[in-house]
Image (cartoon, rainbow, N blue to C red; front, side):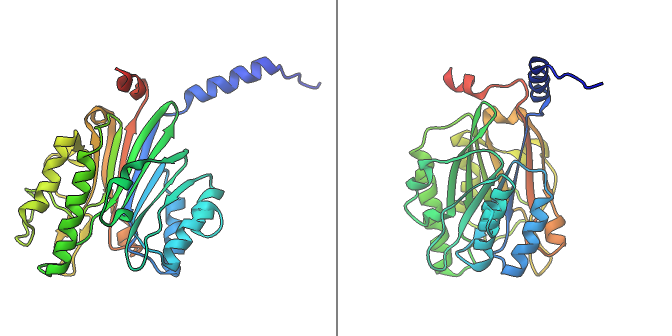
Length: 290
């Protein structure tokens, strides 16, 4: 006997299924170390297996490996590949030998003007709004220059970028739904072990985030944990990669942890940082309207 399908009932079932969808939002930031084409293929294979809403990939160049990564996300190379998997991609390709940030998302992305406020090395900042259910989550991907020890030229490059970025934040209204993440090449003031080559202005970058109503998501959940995202040749550990969130997002954080597998697999010299927020029963739009 043929079963008759009631259209109305079917639509009701679909509505019920949608209501069951989890509203956990997962963001992964990872320094991919400007990969060769061969390593980029391995990296993308690894990324495909991660249950993540948004990827923020740092240390990206206009290189074969990074362009492949971009094409895969989009479905033809790395950018195109991600589009085949229904990813949206924003990658402002840096000029010359400079670096940038690639953001790939399962949800619609809209570039924001924040990165246009950075007047020095602007491609090291990628700013987007992520359309997530009824929310608009602002994600700012950041890749600070490394200081290279006491080499004056690299030190000044880093300091100039820090000054420019903070000026951009100063000119931007605070948001209750903002995530700032990436490879900061910055340590927290009480980082253990302490490295004397870092200066007060570098530690101040971490401290001043509070002024812009941003808090370290990892430290919010793990106040005393010693974790590192990069290990030097000498074996010393550095917590360079961070995820800061707006104060209103702090209660929504379910998890924030360093995932060492990609570093251990030698896919990059950095571990990934994963942050999970639960928007169930929360409307950030209503908070913004208030």
